[in-house]
Length: 151
Image (cartoon, rainbow, N blue to C red; front, side):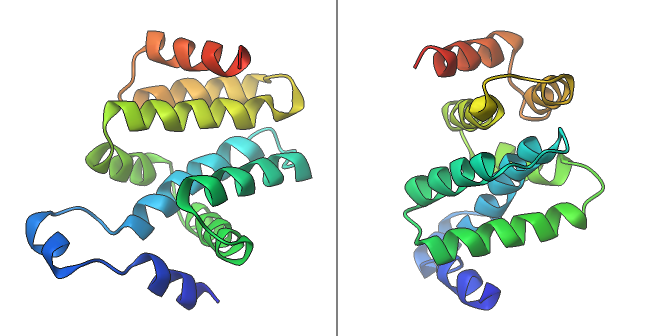
């Protein structure tokens, strides 16, 4: 099943390969999903509500079926297990996403944090770390949080 998802996401036109040095959409999606999974599990309570929120987000954002969304999360979890830190994921995001897209990712991370209605110290720490790794300002982090809390 993972191979099917890889083939699904790795289809890039030849023109795209000639005009850009970007990683495949699949790699970027795995990196983004890895951040979603990491923020959900940082407090050692990866709840069904958090998983449902992540599934809903990636199905909507990427237009995936349930099966493809599950496979993407499985691959992100595999990549997280094999990683030492989050830099490899944020490096891909920084290289391929605009500031606005990175702010959308931060907003999504806040939505996952607040699935249970509160933020614990581990989630707080990780959000600040991700702000730095994604090269965003404190104001951008707080604005994204307020937007999520007031929506």
